[in-house]
Length: 200
Image (cartoon, rainbow, N blue to C red; front, side):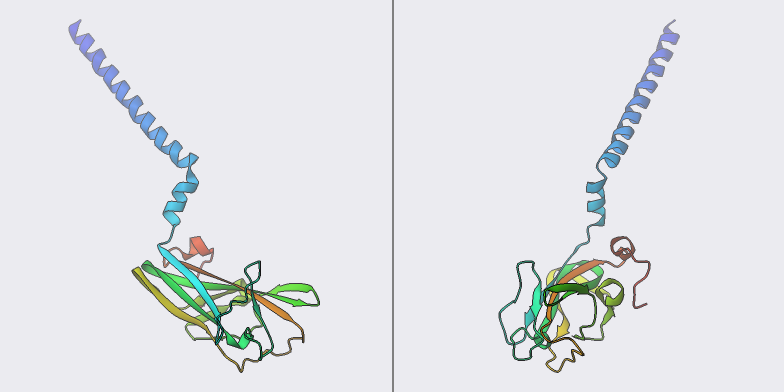
């Protein structure tokens, strides 16, 4: 009788422990499924900060409208002449990463506006790959190594007063939005949604 009672006690203990393990496991799985956004955000957050610094050579004025777009003039006499437009990219973070700059232009003639990714012949260094025809972006072709809190600067667009605007119509108004995006070297397919880097 005593032996049977001990065996029952062991059996109950095994059952209670099994139920406890299942409850903990179930609660953990439920947490992941109920809060996927938080978990994904923590996992996919890159350790980088990158921002464009846009300015016009010889001017401190920004020429930014209420929508955050920068107005570019086609008149060489203007302070915001497109040939005086410069962009640097400042970045910092931890580890190796890739960088891209997205540029979207809005052309307005007589009140009619259209968006276009290209057709502006900026002076850009050979370290950048022009992929604007596909996704509005320039890609920095080299892997960047960020070292903690030290901010580093890359030259992106340099002033070029001899810029050739081709056959842009008189009276055209050009506005541009500039955004930067930096990602860990092994995360660009998930974050940028591309299978391979455009310049490779």
